[in-house]
Length: 437
Image (tube, rainbow, N blue to C red):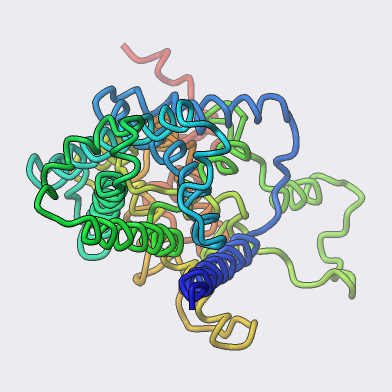
């Protein structure tokens, strides 16, 4: 009978890890739906990027208040989870504070004391975040795309962290042996008076309940990540590593366009020649759905933390246009999830559902054409997400596949083609202004 709690714990742990692994598998499958793109160059610069931006949080502190509190939560999240290793081993082996005799009372007490300080700092930080969202109501958290699930998701994760930190401190405060040792209880000792009328057995029961709820909460949190914007906890690292390292504003050549132009300029090419039998279907220009984007763009969508920094600096959004770079990323992820569910429901094959990322269901043309391509959103993103690349791919699709550019743009391109300039004047008339009085 004494092994029953260990067996229950092992089952809970196994179920939690199984579902997490299953979600990671789906995540990788969905990202791989994107087209291939080579981001294996400049490895040293990529590693430096990842260390500086994802690990070092260098872009977060551009906004010092939120940056400081985010670093506290980030450091607390990483260091406090060292304690989870001990909790897991205690749960499996039926021990209590397994590392205490191994590390010695002094060092163990130092570690627990550090965890407790970080726990209270994380609690304070997430409370500040909650106040900024729900009381101060900072504008970027209240844009129209931040309703329903995105809004609630941001709050749920804050409540999660508050509860987990509270359970951790209550667990320590009701651990009679830890409190009697007088080491490591730098914060929890101030919670102890709340339980001064509780018997020894009662304290043990509360400590056990807090312990179980804490580890179950961590397993639930682990599996909640896949459905939340907080996937950036995991994806910020690969996302910064595989980010575009080319200068901002340098757009890649479309290899299909290059091929067509080369064919047009080749004097030996036969413009009326039929394509070879094994040539296959010609590739689509640009992107109208998630499968037309590359895998880095799809990883970008999953990495987006919906902080809204991109939208808050977007000149189109600031002047009342429809475009929100954050909404572009959120809609891309939503459509990708929809495609993933379609594949799951149809035994591994995508069945046409009549929808596309570019269209009335997700990203509208009005959003795409509102972009000034200034790269402010890319510069501002704390994890190097690139909404502009998706916008440009969709513009390419609209122009080259649909001939659906705005009238002003079509006129400009026609003038370039006919007159060699954006204006509606013949090349022969270009210098007429010289003779004007």
